[in-house]
Image (cartoon, rainbow, N blue to C red):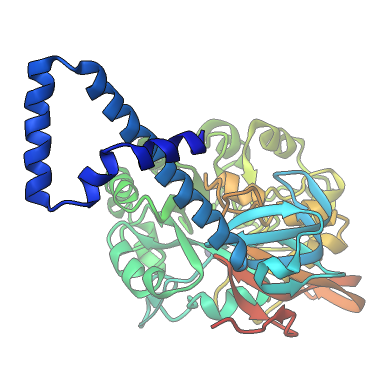
Length: 468
Ligand SMILES: [Zn+2]
């Protein structure tokens, strides 16, 4: 066919008309030919000319395509290649040795034995665990310098980049720090200037977790304003938060769910406290919807709120039923919100957390919580499998916040990867009461990649270590 096209071009008048004469002359020729065609009704010749033009365009297309293929083969195909690691990708059911190629910030290929020569940068992951970038579903990153502002533009929240990549976290969800009144400040001061992907559970309270009386004011809890902010900032807001309300009143719970209904998003509840306690059974079955999140699942707060484990150390059976109903149980470890006295019996009875998160802030990071990998390690040592621990920190939170391009390694997903080793030794995993669980395994981050860029590399496993 190409031979035919070349013959047509070399013998036809088309070439001369297009390239051998000046434009005016060409136009005159075209015009007079048109007149002649119409006059002589030489439609067959006219059709033939169109046909030739089509063939010429086809030839050009083939040439451009060939040049493109040649150019692709000439240089590296992948930006980063993670080679030889044990990949755990819950979404795709991968649990074995695989290579992962990233191109233009996205997962490009997951396969065995991809060629290192095809990559600009190769990360040697032999002997290491490779997972999608971790998602911390409950963190406090609305850092600021305002006095008495707690976790909302205040001194107790932390700028994310210093606490994320070094533990494999590529996405954090700020859990209610900002409310519908100050989300714009949060976006400008934190989201827009962080390399960590920062999402938000918007507080139902206008000024978010400013602390004290601000979180008790029903007049500040506005479902319509919260939902409209969520629609305006839909790239960042993934749901709504209610926290710290102390009162025997369901109104705040129902108002945050109303915002969730208006925006079509989940809500996350830090169930505050009241005396007498509001029953959590009612919360799970009468007020929350499947897909809504109960955080601080394993907290014992001295009777301030109802616990999931009874006085005889048995998990209350309705909690498992609630999980079956679709309520999401989140760790939200925090400074005071995790007790082995709750977690051990709960896990024994089968209540594994759907999502593992830190509740990162200045009051938790230097106590027993520390960081995402420390919390994951605790669940590993309590008998949760590595696959389940990783799922609860990657694909499950991605599903909970409806972000299907996060937390997995499907082709086209975000090019976020966490690579870590499992250290062996004698470790002490204690909680806020001083109870210590001894363990022999601990997760340690080796490399973190976000959007195809190596942003943390503990031992220089990337080659070259820096890409210009
Ligand atoms: Zn929190």
